[in-house]
Structures are given as structure tokens and as C-alpha cells.
Amino acid sequence: MSLLEVKNLTRDFGSFRAVDNVSFNVDPGVIMGFIGPNGAGKSTTMRIIATLDTPTWGEVFLDGHSVVNEPDRARPLIGYMPDRYGTYEDMTVFEFLDFFARAYGLKGAERRARVESVMEFTRLTELRDKLTSALSKGMKQRVALGRTLLHDPKLLILDEPADGLDPRARIELRELLKALGEQGKAVLISSHILTELSEMCDACAIIEQGRLLATGPVEEILASSRGGSAESELELRLLSAGEAAERAERLLLEQPHVKEVVAAGARLRVRIALPSGTTPTPSWVDEVSAELLKALVAQSVPVCSFQVHEADLEDAFMKVTRGRVA
Image 1 (cartoon, helix red, strand yellow):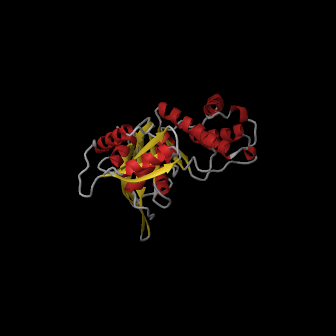
Image 2 (cartoon, rainbow, N blue to C red):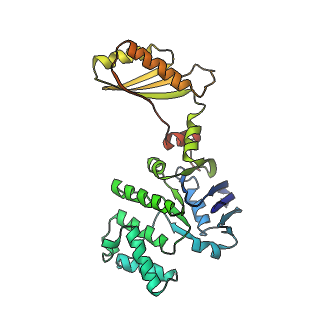
């Protein structure tokens, strides 16, 4: 049974429909990426799941409890971090987390042990006596994440947590989220940094203009974006640039399936396509690739590497969306 079930969720603001009949599930231990352009309905959907807004219609169930009709039963199960989070600047890291642990009803030794455990998990122990006002954005983000973990929720809802972080802080966030998934927590995370999501998520949901366009395991989404396409790209690296690259470019452009060759030193990107009206087969890219490599080798072109450009979440996103926002 899924921990989170979103069913036909719709949210209207007057005549404007921000979320339109959205449905998806998140299982325990799964990190679900929620992808969409600005204004697509991500934050509105997350606020409804977090009990901070109510739908026009539709339903959300969390561990069997209705988020709409039983918000008090659902809230203890949720850890929510909005896209804009704040800290009390005159508190130390420990004081800030201890304050919220008290607010969650934790008492005495249990509260202190929980705060210490969260600080250790989020790598804040060495910063415990530092004022939050003196922290970097990445450190404050870890404090905010720690706050959402104090009551040991089953579901984490993180709205654009990687926004504005430096590369090191993003790597640390990715490691923390993977560890949370291994603990069995379900995580719903939105981001416009698609390369980050592809490295940390097990599944994703793509939303545009309030409508869910695709949902499922990341590998299925990527396979769907690759499958059925009559175009693809190959990436080649030659032993050297200069004459060898020029010869390879001329030879490739003579081949029937090659539509474009872009050379950058010893590297070439080759766009291949089937003739108009031809139905793609699952193996057509491999077959054309083999023909091109054979032609290059026959002419003694020194090829060091030859690979098909694999689709990633950015490719999948561009394929299923239409480039408009609500």
C-alpha cells in the first residue's frame, strides 16, 4: 500500500485552475521528484498535501488518513520544508531545534536525545552553538531540514530545497535524502534543477499547467522519452582533431541517416534520423550506429569512443512539456 495517495486533486482560485485532476502515489522509501516549470502547480499541490490548503475537489490520503477530512491525524506524519524557510536569527542551532522539538511535544531526555540525533544526521553537531544568523545558506538549509525531521515524520515534502545552494551543499543534500529513503521515509521533492533530481530520485512526476503529464519510476520515464523517436544523437571522440576530424565529418555527412555533424576539436556530435514516414524499431539506433562505426573504421578514422547520447530527465521534461506555464 502506498504511503501517499493523491487522487484527482483539483484546486481553483476563482476562474483560474492551478491544479487540474492530479493523481499519483508515493511508496515508503521512495524519493519522488516533482518536476515542472514555474507556475505549473507544484507548490500548490505540495501545500494541499501538507494540510496548508484545501482542494476544490479530490482527495489526499496519507497512511490511510484523509489529509482533507482528518488533517490533525495527518500532520504528525508530515515534515514540510517550503521553498522559503526562515530561522530565528538570535538562536543557536541547538536552541532553534530544541525550540521546535518542544513545539512538537517532545519532553525531557527524549527531546534532548532527538535533537542530538537530528543534529548528528544532518551534520550540525559542530555548529550546535553557532547563531543561525552566522550560517551559510547551505547550513541554514540543513537546519531547516533538521527541523522537519524532529518528530520523525513518515513523509517529507521539500519544495525546491536545492535552490541557491553551492555544489558542495547540493551533494550533501543528495546524500541526506538518499539516507532518508534508506530509512523507509517517503520523500516528495520539487526542483527545477533536473540533473540533481535524476541523481537522487527513484520516481518522478512531471506537471505543466496544473496537469500531470507523466509519472512513474525514473527509468520508465527515460525509456518512454527514448522509445518511438525517429531521431537520436551519437557522440564520438577521435584520437586527434585536425585532418582526422575533418575526414570523419565529411564521411559521416555522406551517410544516408546522418542529418547533422557538429565538431568541437576531436569530439563530434552526430544527429541521425529515419526517413520521414518510417516507423522506428527498438533497435534502429543501434543498427545505424553500427553502420556508421563500420564506415569510419573502414576509412581508418581513429575512433577512441563512440556512444549513443542517453536521454536524461531534461530530455524527458522537454519532450512531454510544451514549454508553457499556467
